[in-house]
Length: 115
Image (tube, rainbow, N blue to C red; front, side, top):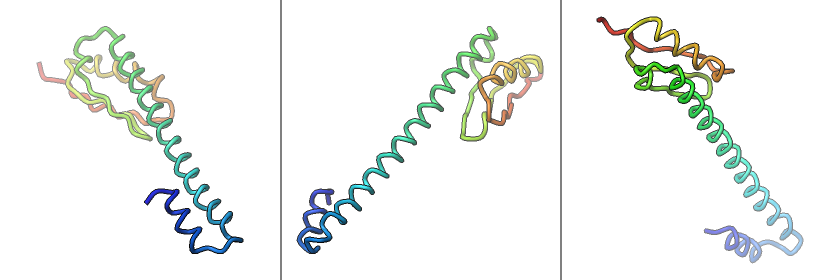
């Protein structure tokens, strides 16, 4: 059922005095849904922008093995996964993303491979 058909059916059953009130309630509900969708899309865009910046920061370290690392970003944490050859490389990955992870908890789950 569309909004206009809902308003039409409510118009038929509601008294003339209540028409504006009913329309206002439906309109405000739609406005609330639009605002919520807008907030969600802004949040997703911010997360996508942050992930792009994190990927660039890791690539700019110049360490080829970090290009295979995977980063997962949630509302409260940043997780780095993969395999590296040394603890130094693992620490470089953490330090590369630290300036971009403001407000996020960093979980470095990079495994150091036995060589």
